Amino acid sequence: MAVEYDLVVIGGGSGGLVVAGVAAALKAKVALVEKHRLGGDCLWYGCVPSKSLIRASRVAYEVKHAGRFGIYCNDPQIDFAKAIAHVQNTITTIEPHDSPERFEGLGVEVIFGDGKFIDKKTFEVNNRRLKARSFVIATGSRPATLPIPGLKQAGFITNEEVFEITERPETLAIIGGGPIGCELGQAFSRLGSKVTIIASRDRLLPKEDPEAVEVIHQQFKSEGINFLLNTKAEKIEVVDGKKYIWAGKEKIVANQILVAAGRSPNVESLNLDAAGVKVGKKGIQVNSKLQTSNSHIYACGDVLGGYQFTHVASYQANIVLKNALFLPIFKASDRVIPWATFTEPELARVGLTEQEAREKYGNDIRVVKQEYADVDRAQADGTTAGFAKIITKRNGQILGAHLVGAAAGELIHEIILAMSHNLKLSALSGIHIYPTLSEVNSKAAFAQTRQNYEQNHRLQQMLSSIFRVIRRFG
Image (cartoon, rainbow, N blue to C red; front, side):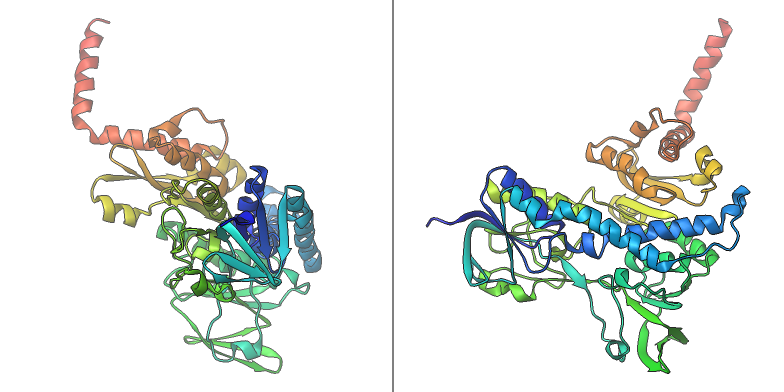
């Protein structure tokens, strides 16, 4: 039976826009359905606004601590409303790239509306029934809600509201010690709020290397950021206009509460049962080709509930695009999935943790750790906190890397490239410009070479004998 479209893409966030834009460029007939506005969480509530606010907060921190470089700024003032204006201006500048007009110009039919599947081959929106060869679900996620007594009555904000407040909260309580909580907690603290982070785990950023997180712990303590570990918010009350949070043995007072405790996939309104699409506890279930339980319906991005990053959504979108338009033969791999948390210092990682590597490969691994303090540029910049930890097999194959320090989110890409092309750690020992922070990678590679040599006593004895013979002949 003939269909009207090659692809119907549901969701206009990072993943959906990649699929729709590239498919249209390939001359496929594409409809893009979005119930709110194009750009998704990344543009409006995530990456773009958060990094803009972080930039403003870093300037504030540098000015406040400029004295260490012999530069003194008397009583610097922070205009919080202007910092938020910088955030909104950044969004406004980037938004045209994701605008309906741009995608319509590419040949995409953009449809705004809240639709649903009515059967395995039909999606209905605005009383229109759309049929296509394939469908792509890219509806993203939203902040998870928490059943804390009194939270709803007291009022709270999430990442969807935080970038619109123009008055700095004197005290800010953050529920959640993950990337969002830590990034925004440090940013608000540097912009003048007294911040308390309530984390249910034994450390902040529990998915990161424990040694790397300890660097963040020490930095937060030095900045006066209060964080409670192994603690849950138990109840919230409002007294005389102030919010009181009972958390463990603590009673925290806050002008504002930011909830940053996970994400939930946006699937409820799609009527996925009618489409034969299975949903698990975390999100839509897919196979390695990113097909759902209905082989003509694909999914990508946050709605899967796995790696919830814009770059992962874009990577998955490219896999989906090829499989949905042509033949489903391409598979997604999570072997080289990087991410970064943009606290200061930054954390970045790719591949296995040290513990995961030991569990999988036993004694067949090597761990090399290179301190930032031993990199000359870090000394010159005064950014010596942190290190690069790289985990390899005995043969030098890179299994994972964890960087904590200045520009870690940039420096990790050299390791990502090496892993993507199955290069060994020794490949990073090539020439690096001096003095740059990127030497942390080359020094790590040299450190492993030296480590291997020091452990190879037979080679040492052989070389010693060879050089002794050569010396006899002058």
